[in-house]
Length: 462
Image (cartoon, rainbow, N blue to C red; front, top):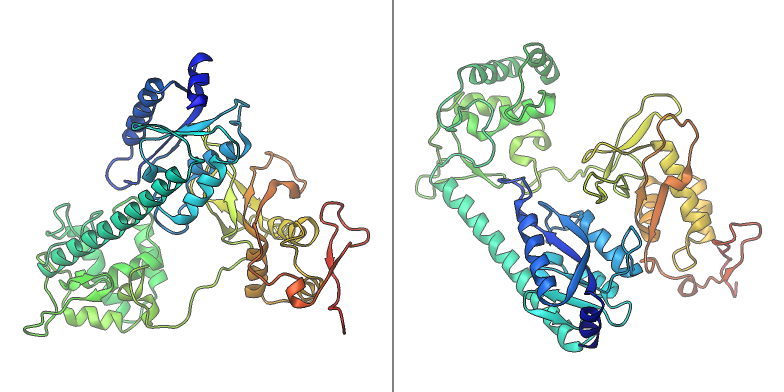
């Protein structure tokens, strides 16, 4: 390639290096991404490239919906602009394989759109330097995506089958040590098992779970991972089938087909099956262990709605020690004063929070005063919003305008509201029907924001 020869003569083609691992349960020391970065250095050196920046996602899945990858987001941003954060020009990316970059079609589309935004870009891996603009390379990328998606489905099925086979044999649950048992997951922990047994007896006798949680806190009890007990965790502990020796898998009690009896685990039970059924009867179905979690079926048709308007739309814009941006979701929580009775805070890095009313007000400004014309809500929607639109419809309106908003950390000690902290990521096209299809026409909004400057007029021909 011509670009490759020019790069060698000028000291190397400037590229960015990307590495990602998805294993988050066993080793968290980042050795996987370090190894990939070293391979990328060797690959770049062998093919006449010069790495000017590195982006990593340690323990981040690329196949799960809603997974946040700060390193990948920074990579796409850099490729789109052609420059890194410190202003260095880049002409491509080096990676150990395509499946480190993407495992979903939408990520492939975003990556290739950013990489091919300018001519002369290259993609480099241990197999060589390739032209991402060529149809052959795009076809190769699509094939690699199909292979990655197939591998993900097969691996998920193998893991699911492995857990089921262990459950049928009565093997204890994998993962962290369950509260009430020793490290072998078979022998009872004398202190914790006694606490569970007493909690079950108290609950059947009519005692509130919050009172049991307060008692455990006063005794200095902590969970197996160091957390303080609360009503939710104690409910989950008491209603788990394991406390009476039963084995469950993916939210279902396993039954022996020969006898119709529940599968018994190999561990020592804390209470009898009759006591377990009695304590479960004191809770509504939605609170039971058997009906909790993403994989467990729920008997109730009620779904938990977000408690605040901006929940799910805000992402943390704090910069981490390695230079990457956090990108974690900001969750609603109780505020500290009357002006901000609630706030949105990042639970990942805990370095960014914003007043709830400020964030909601900033979102409203973005929707109706700064949104680009192709996603700007109609004048009818704006009036209904201010006349008392339901929160669910408001959230649908927000989702039609922005994919999410990045919240920059505030200035410590500042008591003024800064709406510019909320930076929108606009949608390419609104999922709602365009104004022309609804019989509306766009006309300038008098006195409005010079960049927004649009409103929806009343339907024509009426």
